[in-house]
Amino acid sequence: MSRNCSIVLHAHIPWVRHAEVSHCLEEDWLHSTVVETHLPLLEMLFRLRKEGVPFGLTVDLSPTLLAMWRDRVLRRRTLSYLDRTLRLCRDEVERGDISGRRELASRYEERLHRLRSLYVDEWQCDLVRAYTDLRDSGHVELTASAATHGLLPLLMRVPESVQAQVRLGIRQYVQCFGRMPRGFWLPECAYAPSIGQILKREGIDWTLVEEHGLTTAPQASALFPFTPGTTPEGLIVFGRDQASSSEIWNADEGFPGDERYRDFFRDIGLESPIEYLREYLGETGQRQFTGIKYFRLAREDDQSLPYDPALAARALEEHSVRFISSRGAQLSALESEGVENPLVVCAFDADLFGHWWYEGIEFLERLFRKVAQRSDFAFTTPGLHLAASQGAEFPAAAPVSSSWGEGGYFETWTSEENNWTHEEIRKRAEQLARFVKLYEENRLGMPEGAAVHRRRCIELMTKELLLAQSSDWPFLMKNEPSRGYAERRTREHLDRFDRVWSVSGRTEAGSDLLAEIEEADPVFSDLPWNLYEPYA
Image (cartoon, rainbow, N blue to C red; front, side):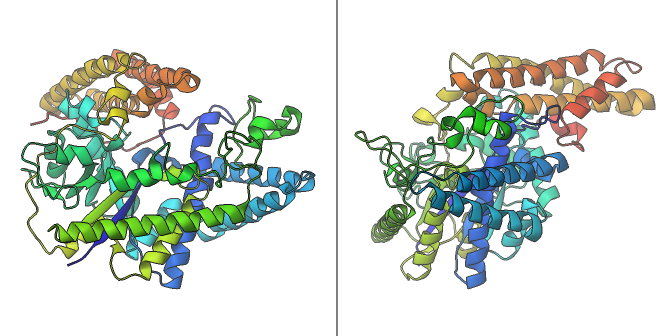
């Protein structure tokens, strides 16, 4: 008998490369998560490995994130972002005339120097290499995901769209990590019954759904979500435990809301004089987050509490002890109720740790260190759990449609602000699927020039449609500050699809247009033409 807990971190940023400008706020989404989440996380994991502390962690790195990490332009810009933040830290040390700020600024500067050295000297700005190292040593399980983070249940009206998202996501994983993935992260934990068949057909062994996707299904096993289930296709499905995950993620009662932790929103980029910040704000001169913050979360009666790392450390100790105690009691109770080899799966967005919750990486480190000293349960990964089960039969499962979005289903992505996108995407998906079918039937009889031209058009239309399908765009349309960018990106990719379509039947036309669009979105450059081949 074994009792285990599995932490799963999902890391994703949509394709936000804008080489046409020297700096844009959306690219900083990428750079800030590298500096605030991935470098500290990797530093911590390598430290534990070096010290011989046993741990198992699952990390999903989305295909668009991987593509941007491998892009030379964006690697340089990430390093520039890091260096710019370092310069700002030095300036803050020099002007640290407010009590406590100089000491904090010095801590930030020392930390950034250390992380920069790891990024440049240890990993040559290649985070794929760093994660691969941890995968190869058996400490981290890496999973594949959908190509552009499309919300698969909403794309299922044209099954070829889901097929394309899954196939290209797996292909990107193999290119980065050199082997087939066993697990597949569903964007937004969004599942619909027909998706399991596609995953299994493409060689995936297991996936993860929200707890109620398993427990509310007809004839659901009473063991769910603490044991995985097997779908009729043979796909293993794990359930995300909402109770344990909400101890950390709950907006009102989760650990990150403790007033002793650092306040994400009290950033000098939003508060310091604009003249002082100007050289750090890029061409637009817009205020933005810098990562330098001096306040802890405010109580209702005091909006100016200085951040105290010692206080935060005490909170971390309390919360890590509480979380581990809760999991130990939970697993013990499950075992006494007849659940053999219970597994509690806690899944989160990776950028919660370090980026949103500054102390989150240290929280994870404390969990791993403390549990390594216990004998009642351990941290593992879904893949290791399956391997340890030695081919055991799991209960039959027929997961229902679900997601980890607000309300548990798809309301966030089908609101008044964003609902228009789905019909526009569906029409073009059907159009592309028909065109690919015709090409497949007739290509051998085509003149070589016509076949090459149409294949190039298919590849470009597929890419632009995939980029339009990202679940980020409808999500961002829900919020006023980001709505304009999300709408522009969606319309931009749909328009590029239409422009390519307009020249797809004319062999001698449009070569300049195709080259322009290829240059605009240099992602998935070797994308296969047959991702939208007929689904059967």
